[in-house]
Every structure is written in structure tokens, then in C-alpha cells.
Length: 64
Image: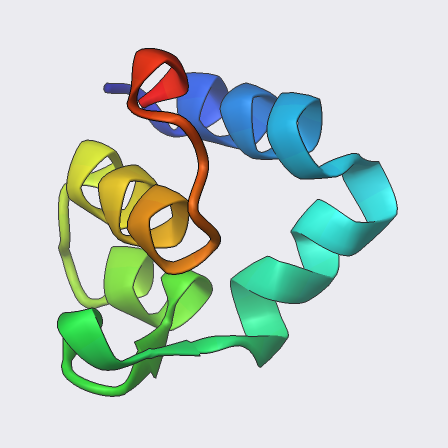
């Protein structure tokens, strides 16, 4: 997954403002206590980060 696709999916699922806030403010335990933005910056695959966000916020699996 490319970063642009990741951002489109985040914005599509959570909205632009809330999605942008989640990326920098919400800590994901499954990503070693990093925010989504920190995890991507550290080299995590955006698909892995997307799946962690979906699991955390109970997004239906059909949209993962």
C-alpha cells in the first residue's frame, strides 16, 4: 500500500479532520505504543498501520 492510498483510506473512513488527528494523536498499543504517523515514519508498512487502526476502531473487516 502506498502512503497516498493509506491517507485516502484514513480520510474516507474517518473524515479528513478526525483522520488527520488520529494519525498524530492516537497511540496504538499494537504498534509498540506509537501513533500511526510515528509508526510510518519508523518504517512500518502503511498497510500494517491501516490494519492496526481498523482493529482499534472496530472498522468492519470488509473495509480493511
